[in-house]
Length: 80
Image (cartoon, rainbow, N blue to C red):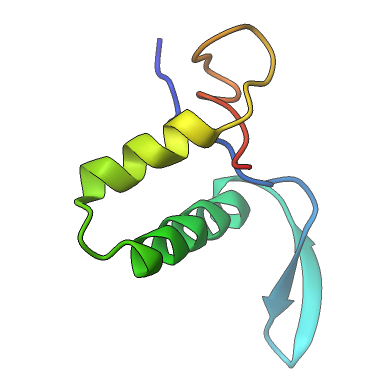
C-alpha cells in the first residue's frame, strides 16, 4: 500500500490560467502547492528545524480522515 504523507485540497481548486484568467483544477497538481506552501510557512517560522522535523510536525498536526491511521486516499490526513 502506498501512503501519501498528508492531503491537501485537490478537487475543483481555483487556479491561475493563461490569458490572465482562472480555472478550476483537480488532482495532485492542484493539491501539491498547498502542502508545499504550508511546509514552507512552517519552516520559515522554525528555520532551525530539519526537513524531517517539518515533515513530522505536519504529520502530527494532520486531521485524520477516513480509516484510522494512514490510508491510500488521505495519507495521514488533511493539513490543519
